[in-house]
Image (cartoon, rainbow, N blue to C red; front, side):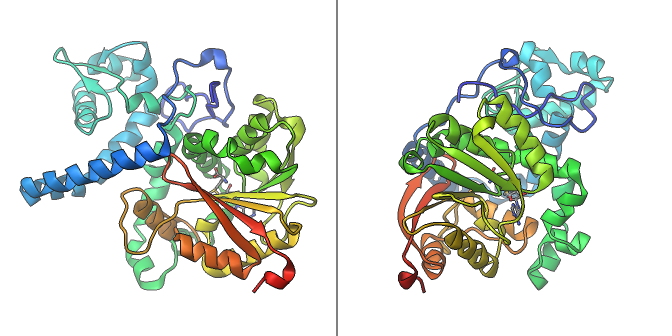
Length: 399
Ligand SMILES: C[S@@+](CC[C@H](N)C(=O)[O-])C[C@H]1O[C@@H](n2cnc3c(N)ncnc32)[C@H](O)[C@@H]1O
């Protein structure tokens, strides 16, 4: 994508929760985050990095590496503050000392300097020998008004909401129940329906993740053959908007909760595809949009346990003709192969969804087959996700 898909304007005083996400004018965009390298290169570099990391760990005293790991939560707290204070946006005009930032923010310069120095020790922001902070490769991706910003995603993962959910880990290990059920007595989605500001933050955070894979998904061959695509649980609509832009023959239907559709309406309008996109409030546990020859579910199945996934896939099969396309985006994860990205995503699903999990290719293929689909192809994507293509089989072939 070349234009701004930023979901919202930053709060003026830096301390209030952001306003409703509205993609700002592209004229306000102050530089793009570079597009991701090809998926194979990213995976290769990741493997190399893990290899070097393992080597380095063996050469360092274990105490130092364990110190770094055990203090990861401290880094997360500081990133949360850096976001609340809009530091990356403030540094966009040029380097600033903590004293200058502190004057703008009415904060103490010594403590601010120490916090930002610690952030820069973790790789976010640069600090020069004159004591001036500036944006670097990582902090530039935390600016609010740039295409593909990751600001809202960092905000979500470091938020008090998620910290609180993780305090329930001991109970989850005992009962298998996720954090929202334990804390609030309802599913995350029911809780979001009662907490629109948190629901909106989550939808914006998914946009940050989606931006990484949007082009790879939207340019995939299967979308070229579909006439009407239902995006189930499509969230803020970023991916659907990109698919519609790249596939002019397509009509789209976005099915999600009412509060989320409000955000999607603005984004689809902003990106010039609203007239080809219908917004349908509803639940994929009840039904799927009518008349679609393709259904798309990105990061949906990993939110649910196998029984719920069977219901969702069964509804998808009922809503598609034989030969219809089911396109899933999921983070495939083999059971006994740890991966720094997908293993963490998996435990986040464990804590923050209704018994959701990342699944292996074999697990997904089997669930698909049970519900009358054949897994036909897997397209790896840059963000460690895969676009999984399945075809609706004739009823006799269903098990
Ligand atoms: C993990 S998010 C994925 C959003 C989007 N597909 C993406 O990848 O950016 C899950 C989405 O499912 C929606 N959702 C949850 N339960 C749903 C239901 N029963 N029917 C329709 N959408 C639902 C949520 O509101 C949320 O937008």
